[in-house]
Length: 246
Image (cartoon, rainbow, N blue to C red; front, side, top):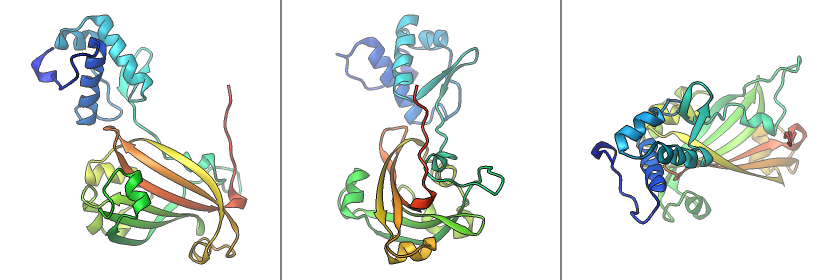
């Protein structure tokens, strides 16, 4: 393989797996930005000395893993996750005309503190590691819609510890990328149902003990490492589940 693209890989693996590891490392290192097109298969074959079929098979591995996406007639691109409408899968956020409304974000509190043991485990960090916690309220118009508790690794997101709260904006993932160079590639979510405690109820403007839907999200970077854990609470009467089954 071409020296400029060499990467440590298990030589016992098939060549296409070694090549997929090589391409994966280039994505993780930011050599190809999210949303950008990677070189054509013929160019990669020339650069690496691998057969065209081997390159194609290596790319298919990354397509199956969700790192790359093929666009017919355009090429192969680094997949850029879009979380802007993810909340609409679970909560109805619409205006009087039925149009979807993008909730605004307001940081209520920010603090540096040791990560709770359960959060540290989810983020694959040692117990007691320093974390950055953000309490955030999502509003539709002037009405509270969601309350969020977000935990991040303090060192990796140090720039956010000093950022003026008014500069956080409504969407955090673009901010992570812009301020910290941290790009979210994918996330997993778990939904449960609970009851609102006193603080949650006050911030959401609902009665204490009212039913709430709880969404736990764990977000990962392109390197496969967990980078953000968040828990969101929303009033159960705003909950809706929609999925297309084929």
